[in-house]
Every structure is written in C-alpha cells, then in structure tokens.
Length: 422
Image 1 (cartoon, rainbow, N blue to C red):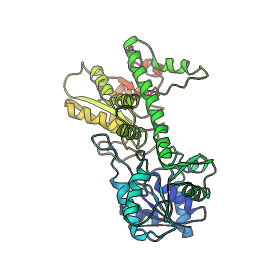
Image 2 (spheres, one colour):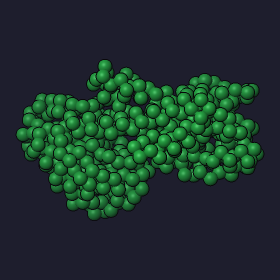
Image 3 (cartoon, one colour):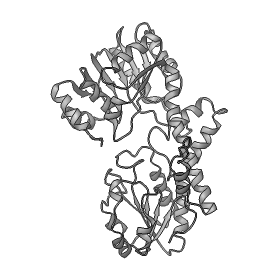
Image 4 (cartoon, helix red, strand yellow):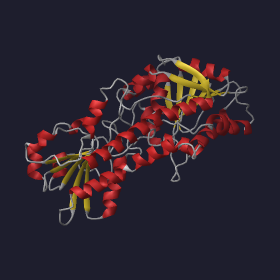
C-alpha cells in the first residue's frame, strides 16, 4: 500500500519507518527541510534508539522517502503536533493544515487517519466538516479514523509494535479498514471503537498519570511541612497490593501528559475539576522548586550561581517539549541575582553550552539535579566539594544517596523531605 504520513516528528517518523519496513511504500511529509534532507540520506535528527538504523534500511530499500508536498496515496496519516494555546485550549492549526494539504490528492476509497492527540470530537466534527466541504462523505467516500499511539520515548519502535492500540472509526467499516492496515506491524491487540471514544481514551490515559503525579507532588509539599520523607511514604505505601503512588518532581513535561488534560478541561470546564486542579498543581511545581532554591541560597551575598543538571522533560532523551526545567530557568533568570548554568549533553540548548559537570559547577552556590540522566548518577563528590563556593546540592528526583554527599561534607537537600539532611 502507498502511505503518505504528514509530520515526521517523534511519532510520525517512527511510524513511517515501521510501515516502510513492513511491506508498504511510504512518503513522509514535513515542513522542516533538514528533516527531509536527513531522511532521504537515511539519517535522523532526533534521538531514539534503533530508529536511524530502521530508517536507513527503509531508505536503502526504496520504501521510504521524504518531501515537502504529498502525492496521491492509498492512505494518509496525520502525525502533527497539537500545541496548547496560552488560554489552555487546543491549537488545531497544524491538524487543519495537514488535512487541507492532502485534499488535492484525495480520491474515493482513500484512508485518512488522525494520530495527533486532539480534543474529543476532532476527527468526527473538525476533520469531518473539512472533508465534507471538499466534497467527500466520511465513512462512504473515504475511510476516516482516529488511531493514537501509546509509546514511551526511548522505546518507541518496540512499543509501536508490541503495545495494544485503539482504532476509533467514523463508522465501523472505517475502523476495520484501519485496523487491518495497522495489523501489518502491530503485534499487540487492536481494539475497535468509535472516533470520539478513542480520542477520549487517549486523553484519559495521560490524564490518569497527570492526576497521580499531582497527588505525589502534593504529598511532597505536605511532607516538607510535616518533616516527613515523601519518598519513604511512597515506597512503603506502594507495598499495598492496590496502591501505586507516582513520583514527585519539579513538574510535568512532554507533549502528552502536560498538554492532553487541558483538552478535556476545554470541553467540560465545569465538570473537569479534579483534572483542572491536577494540571495547575503540576504546572506550579517549577515555581515551588524556584522558591526552594531561593531559600537554599538566601544567605549568599551577591550574584548566586546555580548549576542545573538536565533540561529535557524526562531522562535520557533529547525532547524538551513542555519541560518544567525551562520554566524553572526562566524564573531564575527573570528574578535577577541568579546566574544559571545548564548541563545537558542530550540537547543544544542556548543556556547549556557547558557540557562538563565540573566546569559548570565551579564556583557554584547550588547544584540542582533537575533531570536524572544516566550520566549524572555517579559523580566525583569530593571534586564537587572542592570546586563549589557553597557545597550544597538539591536533588529533585531522589536520584542520589544522601550519605554519599554528607560523608564528604556536602549539604544535601531532597524535594519532598521536610528536614535538612546535612
């Protein structure tokens, strides 16, 4: 089958690679010329295990290529971003542009699939109305369905194949046609549903996690007030057979968990009270960490140097989308009186020019572990003690052992532990 995929980002590109290595001819469309040029050479510009090898294989076989403009195809898959606007509503600009981009190439019998995470009703109402305006009856002239991914960065290729999926069709026939297409590489169960149910399912999968992270963050703040170690509470509470508390941190990032719940709030603001509160709790964590940093450095005179380890939204990836650490850095820089130095070898961030932890930490008044990348696990603590102006560390991820710092004369603080551990 000839497949055209609109959007070659963190989901579109791996999806294109999977279809292209499982018997289909795939044309990937993107607005970024660098992405197109890289793909046509068998290269990628994002960080994801085994993806470049898979792309290279497909390109060499002639089953995968990229361009700026679509072509007539049997199936069109929309994998574009759905950002959040300042008013916390969904920005469907890219989805609309993606659909309108394929209209000149559509013909009866084509398959149209939306993978982009979207508010309930997007497939049936938003896309459906655009297709009708163009003279196509969804479910009759063209098959239309929503089929979201369920993948974890760092394991995308594995989980695209192994995880179960939900196909929400505009009608039952659309759902079955799309299910058959994905069965070419998906080994997990593929469930049939209707479009809006599938959209709500995708949103609730991430909302569930967001709400539970908010509960963990609230627990951390409560424990700091009560002089309790939240991480011990979580560890022992999770020994209960029906309890699975999540982990606190400096906030929630990524294009899914930090965004998707707002799409539900947008549709039902009067009813989605728990979801709204959870989102505001997690969005407020960078400010909470900022206040902790201010408190830990309150006795420093003059310019305060803060060395921040990690800026991506999660460990061991190069994805900075919605990263709470970016907001934390913004707060520090906006405050004045702070000099921030960021170390993250996974990205080329403007403020992360320094790649060496020890060079960055030299003369620092505080070392903040913001993202628990593997490379930050084992540090030369005596060396840090000697080069920092104030030997103080703040661990927001419970990644380091307190004793390792304390026995070397460093002051260790942990988000969610309500006492000074030095």
